Length: 431
Image 1 (cartoon, rainbow, N blue to C red):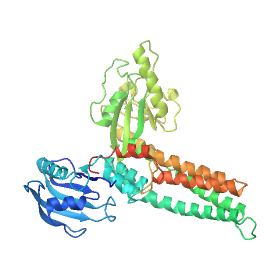
Image 2: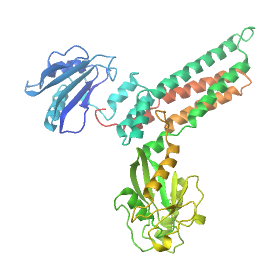
Image 3: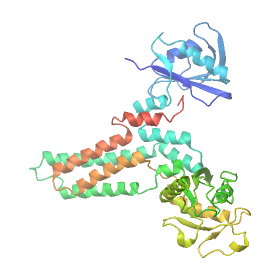
Image 4: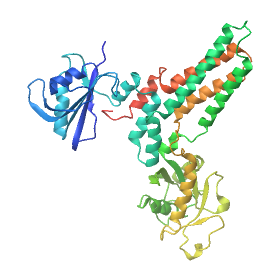
């Protein structure tokens, strides 16, 4: 059965100056002709009057573009209508396309991410590029945009293809050694093991790079300390608004409050926690337990208590809050004196947080792996490490086959429908 032809509004939410309606599939060109008349040559824009195919009523005047398979975004025949961006104009175009359903095949509204999914299925992009595009659509900071663009433009795909080429060469040599085991001229097992180890070492270096999740979800900065140490006031001062309730009553904050913000292009999530103390109040005790869990999971910890009471943490910033008060005028050695009232020290504190957060970020134009990609790359690394330590050529060849299969899962060539469903559910309609 031929694939359905799909259509959707592929631009932003109306009203807008211009809107784009995209059609992709085997009947895309015929649908375009029914609405716009003669289509222009491929990849050339032409001004046309768009009319409803059932009653010839004028819908709009605009540009139409034609793309021929496989040289299109989806790898299928594609038509784009560039129309005025009013809501009623867009609705009229979608209704006109829907009226053609069944006349020359199935014609229906696209599901979220379906255009990009077809590009993946038709080999126009691989799974890593689709994931990069999803991150690019969700990017809110400059750092997120650069990292997502590196994936979407095929940075990881090109690197994986180079690894796969080397892996195929290793597999060919291993199979030749098995087939011609009795011949004098064959690759020594030791040389194959050494080459497998060299590739495994290179993959390990990639696995040690900063990951995509902290960049995408935000670096977790937890503000902790005893009650009334100034945690909520500090969070409000950093956020520039009253996000947390501030009172002189101990135990006011009983649950954590997350404040997302960007610091110099770095996404952060500042978390205000319940004050750490013993309490007979069951609700407050639950808040304290949650505070301990958040401290353990923090990327950066801002501690507002006594230095000797600070929990162990690899990225701890000791904060001496309320330095504007006379009794708090002297900051302990190694502590940053800050005042949420006067703003003293806030800039220095944020600078320190930014320095620590940078440990979680990829370098300039570097490619950051997400959790799924890293898991499959780790499978390849483990198989290559086993091959490097192998004492049998048949076992080595099998480990190389396992590594090739893991690479196929990484790029989406292997069947991973559950991963695809989860990924494309993040896309908007029309993408």
